[in-house]
Amino acid sequence: MKMSDIIIYTIYCRHSRTYSLSGWCGAFAVVLFLLIVLQHPCRAAAVDTLSTASASGPTASETDSMAAHYLRMVVDMPADEECSLPVVTMPLADTEVNRSVKHPWIAAAEVVGINAFVLAFDRFALDAEFAKISPRTVRHNIKTGFVWDNDQFSTNLFAHPYHGGLYFNAARSNGMNFWESVPYAFGGSLMWETVCETEPPAINDLVATTVGGVCLGEITYRISDLIYDDSKSGPARFWRELLGTVVCPMRGLNRIVSGEAWKVRHTGGKYHDYDRLPVGLAVSAGYRYLADNNALFRGETNPYVNVGLSYGDPFDESVNRPYDYFTADVTLGLSSNQPIISGIHLLGQLWSAPVYSSNGMQAEFGFFQHFNYYDSQPVKDGSSEVPFRISEAAAVGPGIIYKFPGVGNLTRLEQRIFVSGILLGGSLSDYYNVIDRDYNMGSGYSAKVHTMMEFGRYGRFFINADLYNIYTWKGYEDEDLATTDPLYLNAQGDKGSAQLLVVNPRLQLSVSDRLCLDLSASYYIRSTRYSYHDDVSARTFTVRLGLAYKM
Image 1 (cartoon, rainbow, N blue to C red):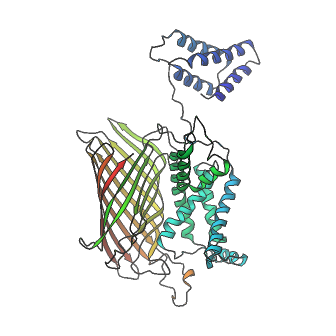
Image 2 (image 1 turned 30 degrees about the vertical axis):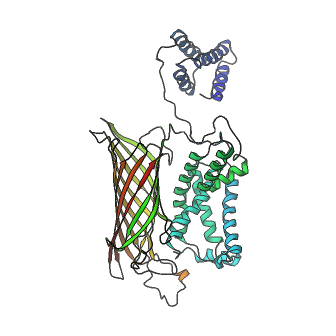
Image 3 (image 1 turned 90 degrees about the vertical axis):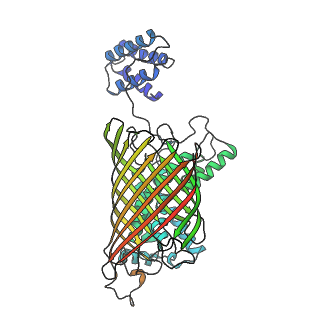
């Protein structure tokens, strides 16, 4: 119970009988009771019980009786005796350390400021033609309406969601909660598409920036919670502030503006409660082999770094806010020939509820947001074929997580099944090649089955299978390409559908308590059916070998 709750409860008792002697005695008894139980081993149970009673609004006589009853129990109980007071579980407080009130207008100004800064950089530093806007271009964009643009894969399906995360976190770092921050991602994207470019607004950018931005924004905000610690000072504080700003730039900026970046708090300085929301982090590094067109001995080897994060407990019923549970897996390629970001896989729990719990088995049903991104370039000194490109930039759907009891050496077994509707996704195209785009966009659905087996101190084994079905319904075949401005082609790509299957086994063998050998493979199978071209099937694989360190 907070001190404010104690004061309110005391005032309530005082006024319940219009300043009567009974009311004052009840108030005095409550205060005396709290002073005693705060020094007693049983104090938590007594305070929780009193908190529950106060919520129902007792009368003064009931307060007197209740306080006297529990006071006698505490006073008469030996100090070393186990607490026997009835305990009522209280809802846990919000783990977010939000030391400021909400500032919606400041957040809105920051969203506008983000767009103004990027626009000024494009216009004056890069001298980009698309940034030379005017009232005429704004009117033209509004009159033209939305089209499907032809930016490259990483721009449309990673950079735009990241940009949306900045809008989202302009609100989050100004006191807004998850749902209150969503309109800022949409508003920032809508402003950019209609006002800040001479090119026609893109519907795919609006979707990716808004929905994908929410996912990246909330996860980066939560990760920054793990970094910041206001009780630190000196170099340790500097590096935390720097890293927190890199992870979540808008929050870092607001901390600098408000002065929180250098304020030292000797109590309550941490922003994350590890007891409520456990965190598991693993970093692995090694070498990856990328096959060229499924050839076993024709491929490319390059170093990689993989970061895996598990945040929260999906079976904890006491926490059920959006992203109180999420997983993140990011792979970085360290060669000049392949993209720096070769894979991003994010899963965020929006809501969940238990559906079964018995005999050591638990099942949790919920709705989850998905963000998946696979990217590659043609293998060096190989064919010109791009091995794979897959995106699930905006997807939400139901899922169920099972946890089975351990048997023998199998100490842990989890099964996860997800189905999602894909609002915006992307897949490699064999024919479409306009401006910077060689992929199709569209919508559809995905299904995922993930299994994890843990063998005590020996290690863990994972097997994941992800199936994506993406439909491209707005083609370009009825357009005269010789006379059509590519900016106004307004096509999702080649009309048709793509089925993409990714199978990923992974084995981790323990070397010590924190270090393990990490061996994994990914097999990519694509089958694309075109309405106006020959169908194409393709497959390839990657293999990774490295060392993983668990923190």
